[in-house]
Length: 274
Image (cartoon, rainbow, N blue to C red):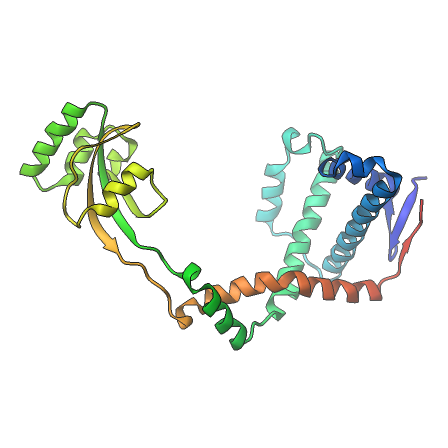
């Protein structure tokens, strides 16, 4: 029969499962580590521990009757391809089983761990005080552009814009960039979203004013800012839902650790040393 390296309850983990994982994952470790017998032993043991934990969690998910939704199942079947299997040493069925188990574990964690993490009011306030800047919205402008490949065309369009107010209609007619379909609308942008030359023009312009001709590596441009949103720092109340999510993510690892320890204690785990 096949050689068993560990048992998680009644379920065996095979030596060949460990070997496949080792060959796949070994690539991320330094060759020097793997070339010493001590280093190789540590890496194998680390991978085996992970396989045991995945097995524990999968068994727990099955015990609780967690199944994949038809949409999840379809997504996995769409994902599996020659390309996905390449270099994994897995057959299609082995790959699908592994991915199904990973998804079940995610669902189990969402059901069992995430809801039980309830950040305190003090933790939320503390996070808000520390990260207030990151939670805010930067200044944004809504900008439209017209792009041409020749400066003289841009100058002619600018003369036309001085007579007519409708920038969007003229952009649709004369612009040469794909956003002409939307009347040149670039949407709301923050600093850092656009190439520097665009940003320089858009953030300097007063609302409703059209720029002079601006040249860039993409061609010649005219810009108009239609709206400006000042920077906004949310109040503690506004930011609370976002902070709760962030803190839950932060605490998930520790909560999972504690829960895994309790699963370890409730399951007989045997490792046969090679």
